[in-house]
Length: 427
Image (cartoon, rainbow, N blue to C red; front, side, top):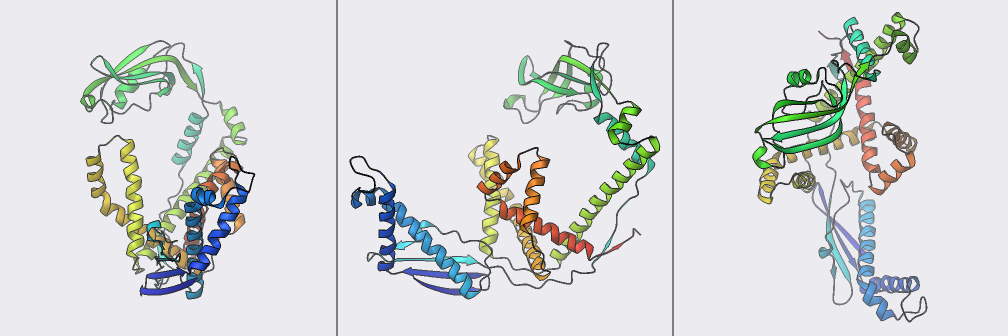
């Protein structure tokens, strides 16, 4: 196997691979023999099927596997011997691989390389804090929200009060025709359906009982399947199956839930939690500002092939979404062309962020350890109420470990920038 590497530009390496016929045939014969020992064919003992039959059925697949084997070897050799820093693994069209008449194999492929660039000074960056103090009114509002979240439903025998909820059916009527229907859903006076005035919806539900039917004028949504109904005037009909009032916990129940002794300690605990949450949000904001500033000050020439590839990936995802919405081919094409500049800009921003994060991490020796990956997978499982092993299996089957590692590395870089920044008090 002969591997040659050229660098026609700083961001591209061209790899040429040639495999003599005798080398390729050696691997091919070994592959055929191995396959022969693995299969059973009718009329022949296991492992005794004629080689021509094995070749006819499995030859193309074995050839493709051997080609891929040599390509991977060539890629690894080119990277190691030439100290290349690939941006990503090259995607090679199988039609580019050439089998000559004499049985030799050759292929050329390009490897997009990480551009070289210098990071500006990233330690001691100044940023102004926007952290606001937690006020008593914030604490009181938070306690009321806790009460609301911990309220229990009680049948509304005398009619549903403000803040109550109901279980029932909802239908959107265009004339006498129901153009949208949902059964057995949760209905709240605080959340009106799209196209329905919020105040009118809340007023209509006030006092409803089991079995009541209320109707509220609406503007029918633009997303309806029936085209002539989109944007037209209609009626939202609510059929109440069960109406409830929400009963907040007593003071003693609330103290028990939050493990406090009295109102003063309750407010102190809520104040502490709000302060922690506010600081976490402010840390995230500061990190975003610092990383964006670093990206703005870093001059990077991105490989065009990689930028185009990332842009097309975003557009392909958009194509799938538009198809699911039922758009026609011409409409999809028009929207994709309209979104191409946006997709390219987002791709450029994402690639630049990745490069800056990786280079700063390499400079400061910031690494994601195996136990950190393990802990993150466990955290993901806990947040989603899923089994840890199932989450690990999902990430493995969908090749998502690399992306998870990048996310954790960016988290480390963001924290590093914040911890090494000068955070000034608000002016």
